[in-house]
Image: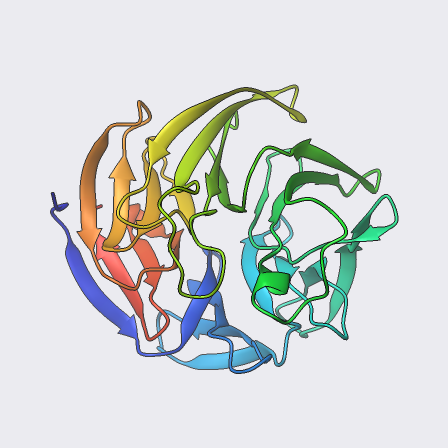
Length: 286
């Protein structure tokens, strides 16, 4: 099934992860397709179409989120020589600082995706993809989902039952957290349907604990990478054929036919900005 919408190529560029829509700037921030061990953080002005590099060689940066103060929260996967971390990046200056780089004294694996909650807490996934793809040391922690409280500096494991936790997103009221498990993809380019390729929903208790884990959807063909939730509660997930659209009940009700879709951002008037490695597309009416 296909959603009724208009697909427009916004820019031909090597957009891989992110992207993040900044409404005050009418701009998109995104991380580029890895070239060796180089990934840049870039900004696309949606009015002029100009693209500029905000931070070059950004430590294998992957998913990003927008903080309430306009700064970017970045998942830096790290390398064998540089630590993985969650950082805060000032888009105006390109300066960054570490928020989280370890748990109980052990280094993070390779943070993949991140969301900021209404209370300012930062939730992120930390699968061991960096090791599996050959650019990080062997993991010393499990493939966990974390919550970090910037006010206290405390970082907690909130979920430990995933094969490869990947994208994550809150429901509009913040009471449900959706987490994708892309365990079906381990080595680069592999797909094992016997491993997880699903989205799990959790109830969020008191803003910090996860409860009542339940299967929300199985993504097929493919596996969930990017996940976003719209204002009406619809859940968008990447899949092999593009972006699958689910009602809050878990019913699949539409699909955006765009092979190569990796991750995306919600923009104004219901627009979805989709990164496909070679371009950024706008899907309106989704």
